[in-house]
Amino acid sequence: MISEVSVIFQVTATADHALRYARDLASLLHVNLTVFVDSWLGTDEKERIARAVVERVDGEGIVYKPLRALRMPMGSSVCNLVVTNTPSQCAEFSCVMPHNETQVSRSEKGEIMIPFGDGRSGIRAASLGIPLARQLGYSVFLWHTTWRDERVFSADPYAHMCAEARTVFSILKEACVQERVPYRIGIDMADSIPGGIVRIALREHMSLICMARGANTGKGSYVDLVSARTPTPLVIVGGEVQ
Image (cartoon, rainbow, N blue to C red; front, side):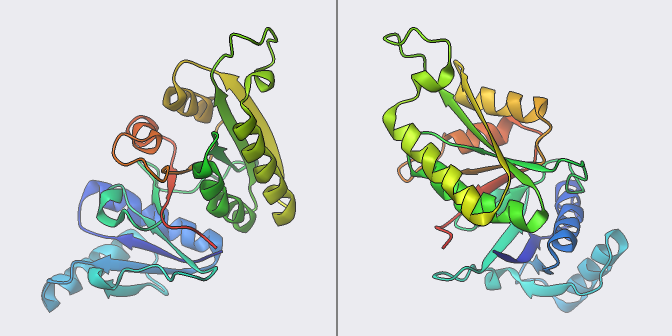
């Protein structure tokens, strides 16, 4: 469950988008918004930033904290979602990259895309994405890209899924049922997994994409490749969400 939305704010164009998106997301989730500012700033500079914030968004209920105070409670169901277009600032936390968006999708069919493969990254993404969908009143789109198995002659992509991916698929479906979140499923065969995610998210008008890095994958992961290409807001899951 998301209990707080945070944003790291500086007076820049990308930070401005993040601030507006964070304010809107916090309002939709009915949670507090915390604005983190550089710890070394003097009193005058902090006051200038506070004025800049309220010039851009409704300042009611906003809490200001030094950047060093940014943390996520571990071992509980509480989660602080950080809105930033520079996720490297807080790589250990769960983040939302809004890109150029300043509002959360208001479409009648709000939907979160959760790509999954044959490992734990899809399960970790779902551990945040499915509860987030429930809080927002959205549905979930479970998406899998599979390689063509030359031993299989069926044109049905499901027939080409490996056993491990089918196990993950079952776990995610059960999680949606447990959280009472409506879901649909998409399976495709494509040459490029990141490219397929970006293309389908746009075609299907996804409100958010939710992904997690694999346990043994750093720079160059599907998360990084998707974040560099997609205009769709992207949730990047940090630590395990209980």
